[in-house]
Length: 200
Image 1 (tube, rainbow, N blue to C red):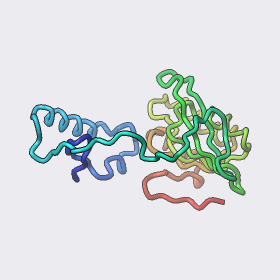
Image 2: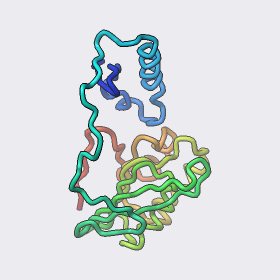
Image 3: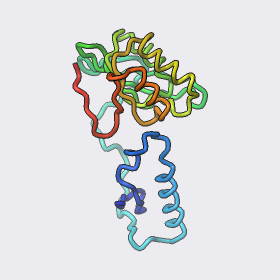
């Protein structure tokens, strides 16, 4: 364990707490430890190892940056696109999520954050850039999805959407990892910390 400072309170953080736990959303142990430490710290006027900052700075760490609200698919630089999608899924309704798309010789490489809108909705939006998808990286938000639907999505990604490779991570969940590995075979890679893939 190593100390991490946050809001002037020393927190205990297990290094790589999610590395072995492929469930992404199953980091409850870690979050409970942080909450317990915050609760204990709140009982004291001041922890012996905590110091209040002398100056609290306000403003942006990027004062010269120009931030833009991404409402439509845009090409940020040649071959690199941002694809915004809004979720209409219960529990994440109206949540905006941006997927990064890289255009390669083999097709698009989609880098999904958590796929709250649904990976198929993201794929549909990506077709404005290109129809071929070489690989999807990232979370597919299937961790709470019922197994028949997980199986349907895994087959649809390969058969309907013609995704060539898949590298799921964090919130895909164990049933999702298993179904995708079965469907994609040698074209499956768990996108864990430290994994790398050579792009076409």
